[in-house]
Image 1 (cartoon, rainbow, N blue to C red):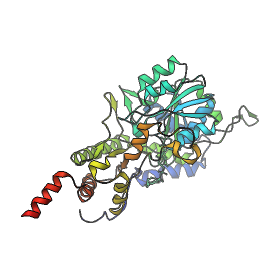
Image 2 (cartoon, rainbow, N blue to C red):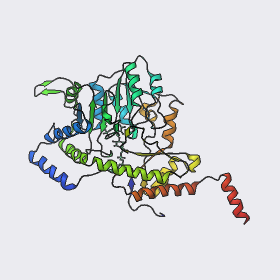
Image 3 (cartoon, helix red, strand yellow):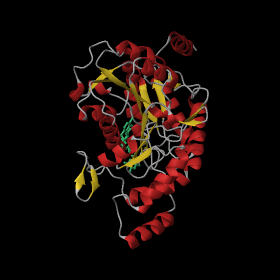
Image 4 (cartoon, helix red, strand yellow):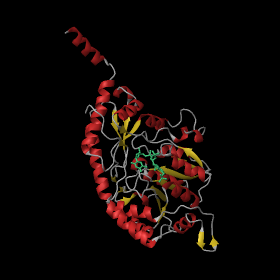
Length: 393
Ligand code: T4K
């Protein structure tokens, strides 16, 4: 335990299929020389995902950010959208790109998702939609948000970038709300190198999204709307198809890693693992966040983050700073607002979790954290008394 890991341990590492399987698929793509623009591998991937997500209302994209931008555009979302400050910047950038004003509502402290009470309080005549984020793969308060959206005639969209594979009361997470966006980026537990997906309840949206991601082309001579280029390509789809086969194994390994973290961190003062998944949720263990209580732990979150680097452990502070604190969004919220999100962002650290990580490595990371605590433990009355006794002996 007294020396750093030989190799850096990053917060995540993509699960990769056997290279021979990818090479075999690649050879077929080579043979066809059909690389993008809705090729057969993308079509096959779409069909497999439709089965996995239990819906035909599904579109694939080059990445999650473009998927969300197109979702907002295709659904005609305008005015103000209530969203969370506690997310990756892309959620809010997608609103900006659609000239929609983000209105930030605070989060709840358990799973860090939008607090429905705060959402309801933020509604004005200009509000057109709610955009929740299933942060770390934990579902938002689905029923409450649904009730609020229906009561105020608002669209309900979810950024489900972290939530692929999650089910709630037996239903795939993408079936809640009007629409969900999934990211298939290499850093996600399920990926297609880069990639994104929309699932939605209104079947008519599919045609619209298909136009929007392909320049609005109806045929060679007709363009029906000003679309962009956001198509998934054949190589991405090949990777996605192969990773989909590994989903069961990927989630199970993460579950065991999370369990090992749970045991290893339980007795370290000042370290609090995020709450377990809510009842009825089949969780995907997308991230392993912990909160650091500086007083109890004896070192700040940033100290822990920096100390871990010395041990070759590269945890991340997802999601710090809060989106409204980035220069391009400053001024939207006032000082003192969003107290829960602000507190969580100052205490959070996400620890490494990925299929290739050994359970023993997780146990060791926990011991390193304990070691950092023991070295930095503040002098309390009890330790002072102990020192006095030692001195007297
Ligand atoms: N909404 C939410 C809530 C999101 O979290 C995201 C993306 C989006 C929307 C947008 O979806 P996409 O348009 O990306 O599909 C990463 C990812 O780039 C980003 O996709 C992700 N969220 C975000 C949470 O994390 P960075 O800048 O922190 O990634 P990076 O390059 O520092 O990678 C993190 C670690 O992963 C590295 O230290 C090492 C490891 N890694 C990374 C890559 C790219 C690998 O081992 N292999 C790799 O290929 O943003």
